[in-house]
Length: 258
Length: 266
Image (cartoon, rainbow over all chains, first blue to last red; front, side, top):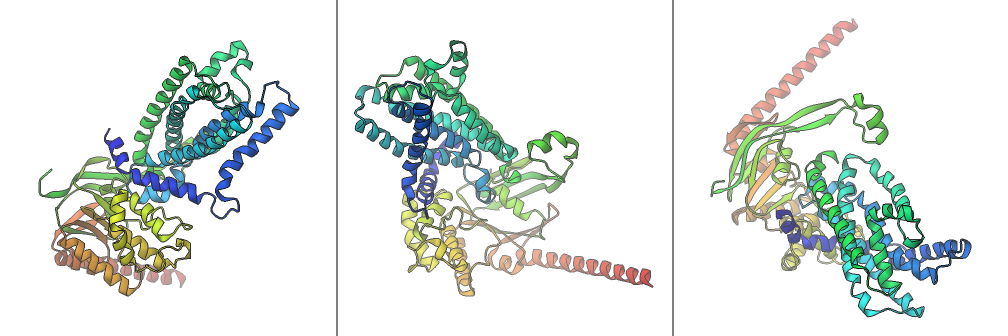
């Protein structure tokens, strides 16, 4: 509780680091901040060509089906992959200055989250331009599922950022794991395509219910099922508690191991 | 904790684990388990001291004696193995200058980043902005990106932020070597001013002149223990005598070694 209060006291630090991150990221590149939109769009076109033109899957408006899931997935995967380095890349600061260490993963996930918010505008734009449109009632659940995903990503980032300090391999291991994780989450395909006997395992994956909810809201334009939402909340809470506790325990020796 | 104290340190010990050959990769962890020899190095042994509110206290000692470790413990960058540390009030440390500076952002933007890392809120920074810019003497360059600054300008900006945080307790680790002579004099005056305002200051130094001029009281730390406490002049004298004796001892050793060498050459 004391730590949470302290972190709130440091909110200006989080805000200014997020600002620095967003504005500093593409400094010097010709297209600058535009890369935030360009990157997912390029990925989208590659996947769309492969999975709907070459391997024809018969899903209607596949690019939309994919896009509404790809953006939230990219938020999560970048948070976890970059989360590994959240503490180690700031070694200089951690060794020399006191601040609640939790701020580092919080800052990282928050700036990725802001990125996703911008990308969501593009999602909306494409949904409208394609004639698919948006429907208001399901849309009210969008902030809810985004918030749930934020805490899941934060829990994971806390966990991996603290572990990486003691075990540097995690960073490289994670980039492989994330790739596997993407293919084992219904991002490129729908959960209905998964064989019945494997479905249970898919629901253990914390991202499954979150991606399903996003797709319900944006692609199928329907209110997500209560079960999906409850499962997502439970999983996010578990990871948040786990990540927070592991981080709090490990952070005491950060300055000595970095 | 006593009412009149700002800092209370009781029986604090700290050792660092020094790996002779530490493996951090998976391969090394699995394959060379028995290679992971390590030694525990005691940096501080049962250190106890108190600092009263508004007092300026100096820690002197040779390199590696544990004085910087003591400061790091006070800021909670590291934690003690045993004993307790209590600190009352907002702590600001001048251990690192220019934390979080981004080269592509302007001096003004970097003031906000840097000051927020010290725990200041936006309003508090707004209030100090003018003073900070004035103190740094960078009025004409403040809206240029920091990468265009000379290293002296960079340090001036960083120091200006750190010194204007208005903490209750200020921890300083050999920093009065910033910028040119004129700026150093200004820093020095600022420190006096901060001191007169009633801020508690703990400073670490091996230049004893600084300590004598600023401090009310002084601790001499040697090999992780406090060996003397008292007025700066007295502690300095004893410390100097010790250094002198130490130097003579080393010189004699070298002389002996030389004689021995010559003996074996003939």
